[in-house]
Image 1 (cartoon, rainbow, N blue to C red):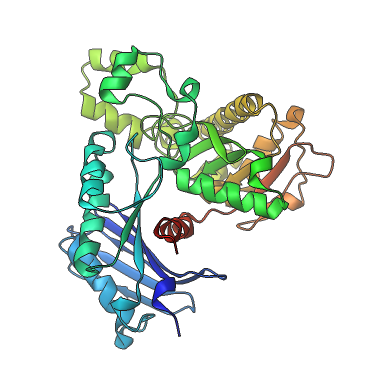
Image 2: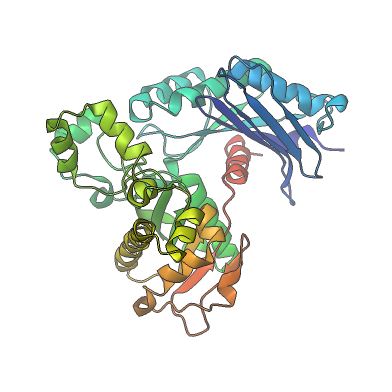
Length: 405
């Protein structure tokens, strides 16, 4: 029988969505169930739950808010009639770990949620207006559904707080950093942390002895330089917009472009939507933000798709080369995320461009999909690796760590 102290609920609350995973922690760290509720408060909401043993539940319930969404999830997880019950009661849940996007300089580590912590998360809302309010809604829903059960906030930005000022400061008047918090914070920290720790274990080395370049490549993309477990630099900035070319985000851009567009009559909200939702792969290729479709179109001779793919690769190669230099050489470059874990095509084109760094692809090993593997050959002094990420499990681990369990 599962013990209460081993079960952690992990919640990722969006503005109109609620993702969750339920873990039994311990030596095996077993995922018991996971699910998603979409279109909360909108027309035709969708709910899906899947258990580790293959049992599934799908529905289109009328859900008005996150409180109702969480209550429905809890009901299904304990009701034998639902077909996806994995708990005897809600009392089996020891703690809830929450993904919180932005912790600014307020949070350098995960934290047990208190009234003061919630107030500090709210202070960070101007830096993440689309995410932090929803993250707070998830926390407050859990406080109602699980009274007395500790909630732990795990911040996307926390892992990057080891960056030195030479990496996180922007060359604007220093008073703007002090007054408004204008600086690089970095994101995907939970993923980069998980992947770095997992890679060290896979390589049978202590993380304290390794210099790693981790590449989180999905619809959102970021790369991170990690020196003996500490972040030296990362590609995302004050927001998740800069850095690599992403599905719909532009990545690095001349700031004067924004000023120019404003002088052409575009308003701030229009430019924000343009750079975050209409740019990146979608903007350049003009057909899709999905790398699979970009590759398919490229192979059929679609010129704009080819340009988008080449731009994606070149930007990442630029960052890998830069971070290799900053780290004074690296032991491994690691690919994770939907693209990084599953696209042999993209990995091949990246690795062939960094051969002068001592990384040489083994094409047969590169055919791996979604599992840990070294994909470089034996002569490589810089290893190339695939390492699947698991942000939810990292949140569960951090929740246990912070609670001292």
